[in-house]
Image (cartoon, rainbow, N blue to C red; front, side, top):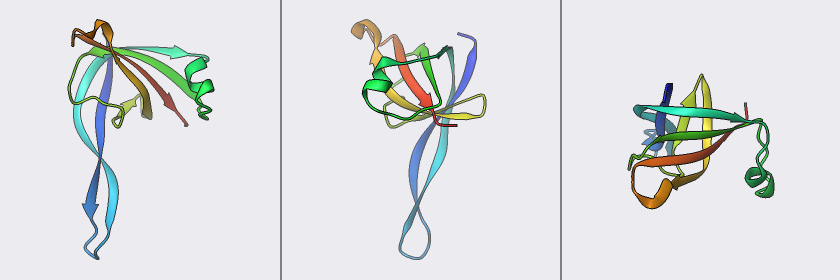
Length: 100
């Protein structure tokens, strides 16, 4: 696992006028193995428009969920699915995509 990713979460921040704005807060850095996917049947079946799909393998971390954003080489990746491999809380297999 040689690739470095940044884990981010969306947070709501009061704007001072009674409203809220949403921004991304960095949670931590993680190391993973990232594989570029040319096509993804899962994403195509979900009728998602994406530029690039990635399959990511990383150690299990309770901070990672489907609402998280991963930053890889300057691209913000949206998590489509996050699978706990073998149900042993050791590794995640993440399918993520970028629209950039």
